[in-house]
Structure formats: C-alpha cells, structure tokens
Length: 133
Image (spheres, helix red, strand yellow):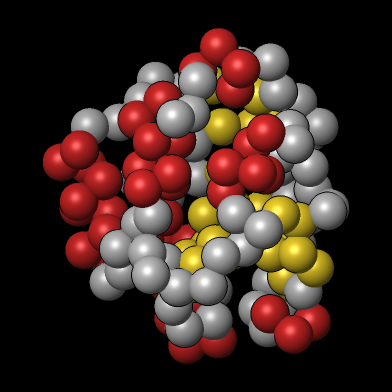
C-alpha cells in the first residue's frame, strides 16, 4: 500500500482523485491501470518529485499526453505517466503487462532505447522516484 506520509517526503503532492476519474482516464487511454498506480492517483493526482525532474501527470493530463506522443503506437501496452521536465517520458506497463518503469526519449518512445528506473511502480516510489535507475 502506498503511504501518503512517505510519499510526501519525496514529492510535492496534489489532492487525490476519485475512482470515477481513474475509470474515465483508463477509458481515454484504452488501457487498465495497475493497482499500485491507482493507489498512487488516489493519494496524489499527479506530483512533482523533490528531485525536480520527475513530473507525474494527473488523470486529466494523461489522455492528452498519451495522445500527443502517440504512446499507444510507439509503446503499445505502456502508459506515459509523466516526464522529466526535459524531453523524456516516464512509461509504465498497463495492468497485466511486464513490470517496470522506464524513461524514454519523447522523440522515439522506444523501450529498447530507454532506461529502466525500477522493476515496478512500488519499488520506484520506495526508491524516492529517481529519474534514473
């Protein structure tokens, strides 16, 4: 379970979102979110990590960002959940996909060219949301 008190040590948080907002965002990106990601969104609907590099989108931003960067086309089964405030996307596999959080160039969105930052979302949060693994 994601603990908001621990998360607040590594990031500036926003108010969490509702389950209805999560379902709407899932529909918009046509992918199911992993349980850990839904827990994160309920705690904080987007955030900026204290490292000033990790910006996670709120549910209102997810559909537009995924559509603009054509995540479904270039990284099928993966969700663009944020960016590094400088040209790199943060991708996480949709529910049922391979575990992992990756940083990839927004120009290519190719996982083969990206860097893994954690084996899963919970590990990444526990590590303090580092921009690189």
